[in-house]
Image 1: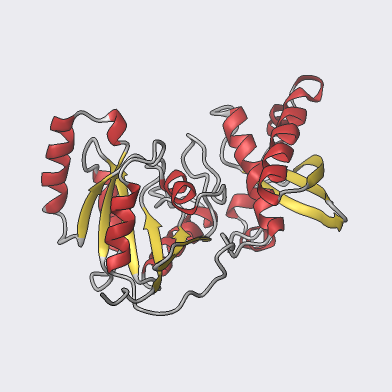
Image 2: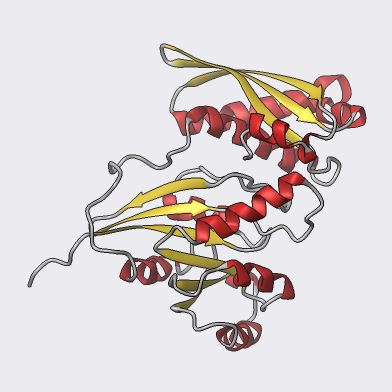
Length: 295
């Protein structure tokens, strides 16, 4: 029996905020490359993760969640990314919640070109009863002629093999583009900034609005040690106090947790210094967005 041809292709993971796209990417790639938080709008960049198997290589692009509030330059830039990524891939995976189609899913679906194979991943099946899931499958199938509908649980890893099987069938036959050990095309400097930003979202919850960004000022390799200095930019003076916390406790915890995450991802020791600065209106300033890597 002849061996199946190797398949390699790009896959966009799209969906509105908080449906679990970054968690899904991290499960599929098997490494922490997209920041995850229960707060919406935590993924701002196109982020590429690679999964290599014996017969296929999946090149995943994790887009920002579609932003329905077009109030500032940052959200407009994020929405352009979703539409742009979707036109450049071999397969798109639209992630919705397994509890049912939401009206906020409609604008995301409208962005996706009809000529790209579209798989619907209904996420969080572990938190959805079977009746609701069945209704969601029926309702969703009327929205578009999806290539496949796959109920999954990104956090538990449920049905991910089935999802990969459906994706693989639709990838072109070609040789791998990346080595078997490569997981992302993002530089370590970018990943370090993302890990700091993730800690800010996780620890500060709803206290801090989305007006925060992280810029890596220094990233030096010193043998087995990475020396990293990062600045956290906030929108208002009051936000600075929230990030620093009483006697610097919050900033220290952000730094400690981010450093541990970096050491795990980079496989080396990390020395991390964090600073907090106020940069008013950065989220609506095109020049600042380019400086911080959002455009």
